[in-house]
Every structure is written in C-alpha cells, then in structure tokens.
Length: 332
Image (tube, rainbow, N blue to C red; front, top):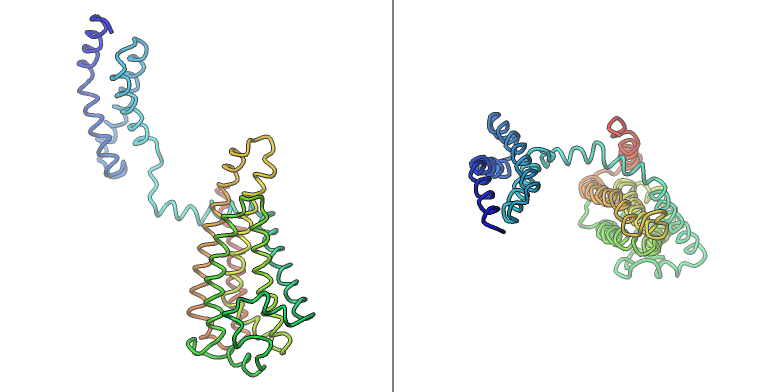
C-alpha cells in the first residue's frame, strides 16, 4: 500500500474509531448478558452503532482501505448483527416451542414413516405370536436367555399369574422383565434411529425383532389364559414405550428414504432436509421413553385392578395422540 493510501486509512480510522470502540463494548455486554437485560439506552446505542459500522464497512470496501481494517469491521459488524437481530429466545422458550409447535408438526409431517414403524412392530408381534403357537421352541429363539428363566413355556400357569399381580416389585419376575424391556427398548430406539440412515433396512429389522419378542411373550400368556391380564400389565407403560420405538423407527426410515429417494436434491441436501424432522422424532421418542419409565416405576405394580391398568396405559396413549394431532396447528 502506498503512502497516500496509508494516510487515508489512518484518517478514516481516526474519524470513526471512537464509535467502533463504543460499539465493541456494547456488543461484548450484549454477548455476555443478553440484549434483553441491557438498558434501553444501551440497546438503542447498539442498534445505532451497528448501522454506523455497516456504513463504515461499505465505505472502506469502496475506497479499498487496508485489509486489516476491513477484517476488523467485518468481524465487528457480524457480532453486532447477531446481537441485534439473532433470536433472543431463552432455553425455556425453545423447550416450550418444541413441545407446543415444532415437535407435533414434525410428527404430522412424518406420519407415513411412523406408520411404517407401527407396521414393522405389528408384523413382528404377529409373526412371533404365530410362530410360538406353531412351536413353543421359538420362544427361546426370540426371547433373550436372561429372561427365559422362570417365564418360559415350562412355567406353571399359577406362577405366571402370580408375578402379574405381585404388588412387590422386588419379588416380581415381570418387574425384571419390564426393567430389561425398558433398557432394551431404549437401546433399540437409539440403534433404530442411528442406523436408519443405512438405507432403512436396519431400522425396519430392529423394529420387527422387537415385535417378535413382544409377540412371543404375549403368546405364552395367551396360551395359559392370561392374555388379558398381561395386556393390562403391559399397557401401563407399554403403550407409551412401544409407540416411542415406532416413532424412532419413523425417524430412521425417513433418513434412509432421503438417501434412497433424494429427488431433485443431492444426497447431502436431502439428508439435511429430512434430518430436521428426524431429529425431532428422536427427541420425542426419548421423552416418551422417560415417561414410560416413570409409569413403569410408580404405577405398574401399585395398580392391581386390570381395568384401571388398561385405562391408564391407553389413556396416556390417547393424550400422546391428541398432542401429536392438535398441538401447533395455529403456529403452522
């Protein structure tokens, strides 16, 4: 840069540097405390200083001042822009908006993929049920070995009935099964969603396998005349828990479908677009699994009346359905 340009740059900086320093101070305060906590006069000066800085940046680019000055003004105006115009929403507001609008809207936009998850689970349960009725040995194929002890086709009907109605969780064999089922389903939900990106197949197969376990376990109790009893016991937490699995499957399948059928977009863009809703589905599934754990821990064994068990499980399921169908429609 020649001597004339250096003098012009120095004069330009000297005339405006005080404004830039004041703006930098206000931006630092806004970044540290938040714009909503600043005094009105400071927020007003911040907005006015941002406009003056952008004007200075435009002039500096026009007259080709030194690169260091341009980089400083670009960085300062970028920080000021974020302080003035970026959303000032708190964490509580983000969580509230997630549950009141963005999450149910994502569920409705992804209903086809969630239905695929429900079908995979249902077909798996039906297959497990029919295979057990054909040959009881299938129970040991589907059911993990650490759960088969005591709750297998070799168990007596009296024993199976006693653990369903045992009000002491420490003595309940089904309590161990439910604990395993929750941890198992949590892992399955994570795998289903994460592996869905691999062309949908892992998500579909894992959901189907989860249904096989459920179907075989139900068939065992139906065979002993305890189908209604087990259904009520599982309903308390199972309606929420299994629905969460299907939603996670829907998110995984949506990611896989974006790769298989990107349409006019590239794979990367299609995956980014699908991921916006898929991540929300995964978060909804995680919340539902937590709720299922609470229902399992506090209500499953405390409530002994079978009708009440069904009412709790399916009542909570209807609340989830109403939330998914009705919440966030005005915002949409």
